[in-house]
Length: 189
Image 1 (cartoon, one colour):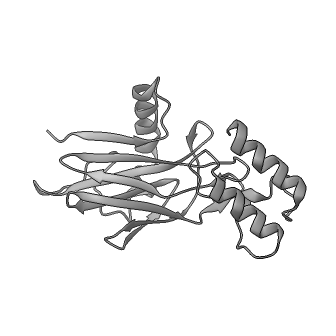
Image 2 (image 1 turned 120 degrees about the vertical axis):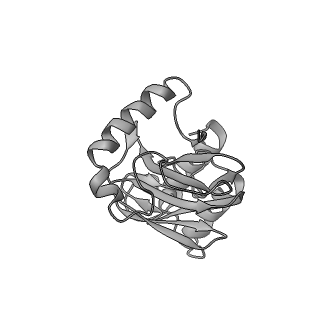
């Protein structure tokens, strides 16, 4: 019997309920979500050999897997999978340390960061979370000094775009945004 380990932003209480609910919803959309996937069914039912595993998951936002489409990249294998209705799947994955990144990184629902995944001896279900915390450029749900510096660089016109530096949503990063970003640094998201 194959085993599975959950990684990501599931609330600690009620994980079994959430997984059961997601499995039910996923079964309803399995035709669309898995028609182009190499995984053969909902929730980690890919056919893998004894030394390869499945990494499957969804993009999570505000209490559920959001309905969105994009591309998930698995590094360092440089494999990509289409995200359809928030679900993605990689099968035939050997044990190792990996990074998942989602594109587009930011949309109106928030931004995603890089999710580290360790495959040892079981299939893995990953939840990729989104952050709307002002200044949280790497979407890890906390703001550090490097992110504040990145936002300051944007105000000075020297940095590249981190959508979450624009705390007030006016499509410009200014001093008022920096006040909110520093508040996130000092008081948390």
